[in-house]
Image 1 (cartoon, rainbow, N blue to C red):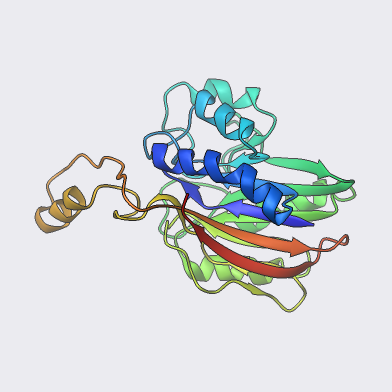
Image 2 (cartoon, helix red, strand yellow):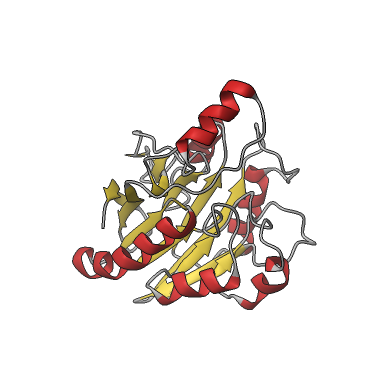
Length: 258
């Protein structure tokens, strides 16, 4: 079995390359599950129902979200309509949206969940370790493998999450920083791990935004409008190959252009 996890989709450039490449990648690589983080898909911040629907129609099996989940007006009223979209599970229980998903392909059931880190992050959330532990326990017997996404700033927190779940889940993959890390590996008990999968969108940028306004903001401290950039668009993703027992056997990071 093969899982493709796509790093943070940024704006229209990110959406367009996902829609262009995912159908081809599924066919060429024999991908069984495609999961994408879409929290920056709408103009670089948040997501809308129209965008979520478009991504799902172009071969994405499930969409995860992060700390910008509520940035687009009205999404809180629409998220519940999507059975293949989940919000971070450690937000308050009163928040709308699903805390996890279970996808099935060829008889294999994959549990998908996202938790937000708590170091250097804005939202006040429950413990990501305890939340993920609880969801795994509550769904015991309902899944054959699991993807835990840790949407966090601190690499130490992400690494700790990887070791915490080593041998218990198929993969622990990080998002949020928009900068891919070179630490993709199989941990001791066949859990695939990577601190950050990186960004899907314009790489001639600062984290997906036009370069000059960001430089000006750093130099002067004055507010600037940060529009989504357009140059050097790439799809950043991590492929995890795993067996019928949900144990990872191979991990590969991809950086692709259209």
